[in-house]
Image (cartoon, rainbow over all chains, first blue to last red; front, side, top):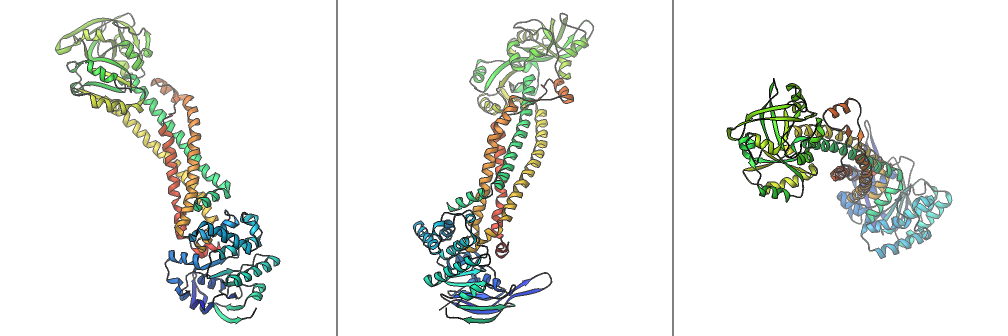
Length: 229
Length: 405
């Protein structure tokens, strides 16, 4: 079943003298439970594509339908709520809220969703334990290593029970050991919760884990391959 | 609650930034409080000097006397009027006067003069008249001598112990004439007063003007001008025609104009100070927003509504404003109190001019509560206006550029 349907997606950036087509007519669908890597060289348009898919950057034309809802038809306010309830984000630089502990960072999104305190606490504990950092629940991000911070970021992304998770270069700032561990954990989460993961990456280790690889170049899909893993 | 927690923790993630922002508010409150205290202190001293010099804070006289200051429009002090004054708790002192113009002559010269009949003891309590006696002695109850202002005495070539002839018109056209020994010479700071004032005992003056029991004005004092409004409200309610009650500012509109003009200058200075404070606070808030652009972008990206983010940022600025305003308020009290107790002595020409004006050459400070709370409130309001900027930023933040910041 398709959870995401993307049709003729175009993004044009207007600089002072030239128009840059960052994404040039992408049409693609994603199914529930996919573990997909969107790959391509720097400037190929993969991050722009992911941003439009995640409701962060408005496309110049085309549509993004998630669970039947055309994301870019939503008002700014509804779009924020939509992102909160349907999409989890994992950023390259972790982007945790520095003044909140690991537990509070994970709990924060559920707090925004208005979930009861007991449920928030239980799920926070569950997510952090699943990511192998249950003992760091009370640590602030500054006290955590890069790998641990990214695990908290994944736990935060999963906490809201989203339809899918968008991860933009999640391993770019991690060492080899942390990358392997994180990918393994994300793969486990994908299987355990059947959450769709879509990565924008250059990292071969991510590609090696992905069951689908979409290659983008000059804003267009060059190839779309599926693997049994 | 979560919003408060995040805002509170954000304040202390970079303590120096919070300290600098709150510090600019803190010093803003202190500087403006000192400046206002100095301004109010100088007005208090100016008003105090003027009212204690002659007019008193409040005067009661007849409507007719107010219209036409003739001896025929004087009045007899009724028991009821004294009772009203005695029942007004703000009134601290009062005295009675009978004043009218007459001619003053020595052996060879004559000049117009203002004769003021006073009750020596109570007049001294109200106006400190005794301190202006440059030669001779002050009057006593029932005294038949007179105190003559120095320039008038010089003009008439008279001194202490000489005789002064007064003649003019008394009550209802009766001829007023008398010869009085000069008991003292008064030297006022004002040249105008030195040219024309003659003081004598009230009963002696009433006899001279053939106006027994008559007064031209009943002069009242309050603790300070901050108590004036309450006293005036009570007196105006109770005192009925033919009497009128007037405060020093109604009696001396020129002084009010002078203070108003000075206040306008003060407002300008304070506006400059407020502007500096505003830019100081705004600068740090701007820095705070700029530093946290990506973090704010992430919060919106993961699902925080912009208005909620705006609330968090507003709360942060609110806390910093509150911290700065309250600490500034608390710190300014002992500081101003020190200057209140130890006024700054003036030197040079400024001091000389003030001494000549009969004013002590000090820069006075006021401890009126208004000095403190108004400054804290104004600076706090400025901070709250600045706090609208982060809200504006939260609503206009470009998500992608914030996430790339």
